[in-house]
Image (cartoon, rainbow, N blue to C red):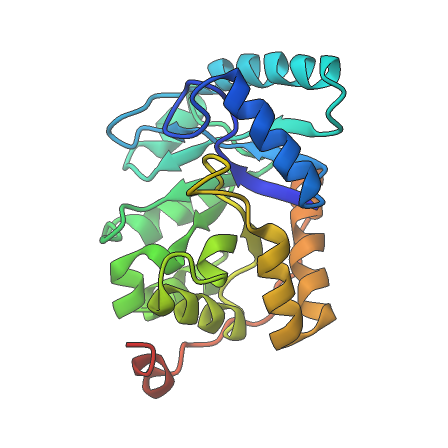
Length: 254
């Protein structure tokens, strides 16, 4: 498995605190069946600043230790960028880091809001050859209340990534049910861990895929896993036609 979103780099954000934490996370990842992790430290989310070159250096250092420790895991450079109006400028200045220098750039909203400029910004990113990937949309309060926003963004070329722990119910029943609705409406394209540690924010990838397999079958599991592989290759991912979250059904999650 490929995990597209993980805070495994030591000492750079609210993920792994030190190298010991990173090694513990790496071992747990391998146990889950993960062979490749995209390290995605927070960038510009009010607390952390992790520009492109810094991340690339730290990923190289981590891979060297993994090799020394004989842990069969490859870490690729990435970044979880909090959305801001000057992202194009940040990219051109070499501060924004797409997933391993592919076109895919992970974008985070705040927990309760989607900026009004989002649609225009995502259009502008796409004209630069970038593909916005909205991380954990299921945990954004405005998207929960107004899923039409996500539908319009996906319809116009953006992608989204749901967190494994959301599917397993670790963030509560409402978020779990909304996550499943996003899968059913073809409004999400990847499952990733967003793991921060091995205790309260672990990987949960195999557990999430077990739930998806039981509910939607092998083909959907294959689509999500294959899409993650395609991202790190810089290839086009599989996309089903997006649908609106049915309002009547949506209200039942509360």
